[in-house]
Length: 284
Image (cartoon, rainbow, N blue to C red; front, side, top):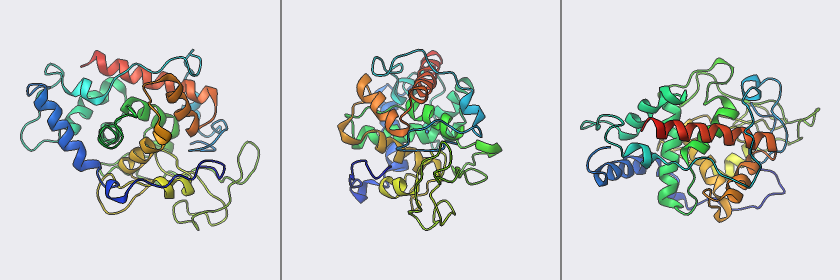
């Protein structure tokens, strides 16, 4: 987040560790109600430039032929696809319903199941803590694909603990051609660079922005921008700031542009989110 943005305080600390606890309760509730069936960038959160050449996979993502502010991606949430009995067997006792949902959707969408779990969990937490936002796992997945290929940038693999096999750290934000200048704000704590800031983790947070929006979704006692559950929940909270309703076109585009103030970026996220949502509905 840049210095010119609103200095909003973080949510109440008691809400910062709700991730995995809420996700299980909410998904189980959904299953019962249904009758027993069933975001590297040169500049990251708060940036306004194009991705660098190093992120060739993101550059190859086509921009959707839509105009900003006119439409949102297809409306879908985790309850739409988790509540269909024909979609997948009902989880057995002791199974994690969110994992079951993610594993069933991973192959059709091409998104690693572990990443889908993080995006779905973030949506469920925001349904509880900020229901008016209506942020979708599909939008988070679209951002995650552009930012780090779902934690797989540079050949990394995403472990079951939600961390990439190698830390994901962006280019120095040193004011060189096409790069915003951001002096160090974390003493190298998150990005290993004591001179200038770098974007970090699967959702590519600038350290100062992470310090403001850090989340502990996996309940390990700390917010880690390299851990995808934590990063996805922080990204969801960031997108929802200011009372946004992401089911409304103007708010959806404003939220995505707050991540990267670039029309092609927003169109790419739109195309990805819309594709993920439609694929999920097709396979529900």
